[in-house]
Image (cartoon, rainbow, N blue to C red; front, side, top):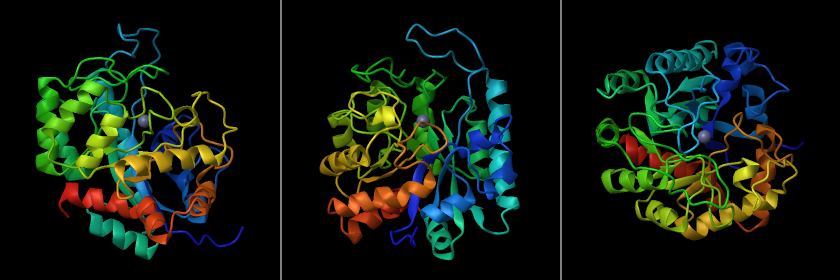
Amino acid sequence: MGRNVFPVVFDGHNDVLLRLGAEDGGGPAAFFEQGEKGHLDLPRAREGGFGGGIFAVWIPSPKTSERTPRGLPPALDAAYALRYALAAVAMLFRIEDRSDGKFRVVRTAAEIEGCLDEEVMPAVLHFEGADAIDTNLDALHVLHRAGLRSLGLVWGRPNAFAEGVAVHFRRSPDTGPGLTEAGRRLVRACNDLGIVIDVSHLNERGFWDVAALTDAPLVASHSNAYALCPSTRNLTDPQLDAIAASNGMVGLNFAVNFLREDATRDADTPLDVMVRHIDYLVGRVGVDGVGFGSDFDGVLISHEIGDVTGLPRLMSALADRGYDDEALRKLAHENWIRVLRKTWGA
Ligand code: ZN
């Protein structure tokens, strides 16, 4: 394969910490070895032009057949959630420690730019769900000091702050109640501290509550267009319009079941389906409001991408579609850096 000629990618969502932390995941050392499993490690990132991104801490639900009345896994035990989350944060810092300066947990947009220029991988610490955060917000303050700069209020299951969507097809994302009082306080605290509030996974009423409360750009780190794939995980036109009005952004999720119009988990999915979502999102939010939120190591992606080394194929398909160099730079990293700088204040 020839040299990657496309702008470097800063990606809005990956689950590599989850993969490395699994029983047979290999731990932090595995991040530095070119793997066969999963989607993302340092050697493959280099090959694919993945410069850096937002690294999610996601807490698995303990095995149970229990479901809430709306079909979601039950809320997590707080002590379990905090213990699991701290182990994942420690994994991120252990990767940094053994990276010989090649991987840095970053806290400002200037640091991201500096890292990308020096071929150091910048990593933003993100929590996918606030299950590990107490309603006094003590953990939020401590984690912010440690480097937390992005937070999804919920994954699917409910917590003290909000409720997410269960994944359904051809159903509205208006699936349950909006933010709790603690959720409203959490939004204000994130605004004060300079933490991104990620609306991916949030149900529709929660989305509108955040939109009404926050003074930061609205960010959906890994969601697609409901008009093209009517999954509860995707964004309706009014939601996309609100994101545009806030100068926020949407990161394209590579999960085939959130891309395909039939929502099937079929990896035999042409790149064109991804390009169509980009076209639609750009048409609705603007070329300044769209980027990538791959969900590498978290979802089933197209064989045509395969893993992070397939990113140049997506960039090439976008170039063929007529996106010029300036547009490709925006989609690849500039939009993410703009929104993070605005939210973080530096
Ligand atoms: Zn997710």
